[in-house]
Length: 150
Image 1: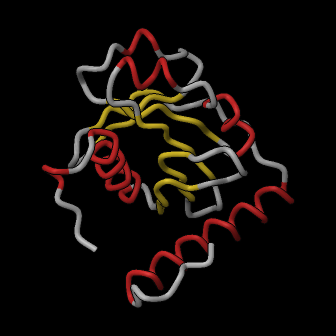
Image 2: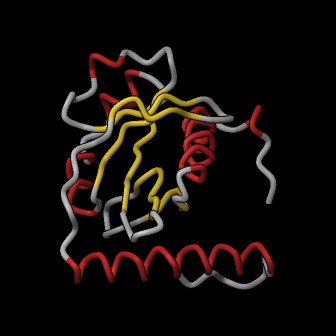
């Protein structure tokens, strides 16, 4: 599946640039991941040592103001980041969270989010869920007539 960057919504363009950047740090990302019913994160990334990072992409101040669930994401990752573009009013973002500046093609980590390590049982379950989601999406891309089941 090919993404036409020019036609994609702003948040999707940010997520693309951030995922590309994280790939350079050997993190693999799954977009629109559901760690728990009622939650959907923009990017869930897993690192080479099993580190789990969440990035919430915000394309404008209204998008950020409407997000009332982001604090619920903290228990599902080792580090939490906001992903925004250069025009976003960064002073709105909590200073004790990570910050990534992005465009559709790349990004830069401006501030690391504080590390809060996941419990081993949650890490194992989450890693399995990320792997299964990624595999189901790949299967659906390979065989579009089959339901992904995840």
